Image (cartoon, rainbow, N blue to C red; front, side):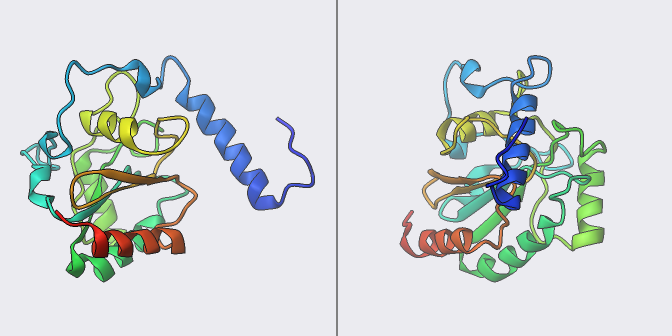
Length: 204
């Protein structure tokens, strides 16, 4: 693929990343658009069944009334240092009713260990202060129902997870509000501004 020399370096990098991830996303053996996966009936956000890293039930309903950021994480990705920004966000906004949930996935072949190993890595290297859930798929035929729901409701074209460390915000009522792709840091002004707005304006 060729890109105009008039594009700035960040835009060229973004275009290249977009092309590469789009290729992965549409690979018939690796990924499929979530629009092709039709659940027989869709649960509400708070009825979706999750598991913690020990395989025990992890009810989303416990976070009713809180602003959530759900992030598909990986331990061997170029975006893995975003863990630090996530820790800082949780520390700053957690007391106000904000909660990050990490959903490790090996769909992009950058988190090969178990969920326990993913958690151990994140605790050792970034001192995480938020839960890491059991591993699952964020795309393809075995997409976890959480990501079926998030991708169906989150803004963004195409309606798929394109890479690790996408950040999806859910308001206090369980409404999916915004999706930030991998290149947007958790500490970006737009992300922080929206979190502050949701904490202030959203009413359960």
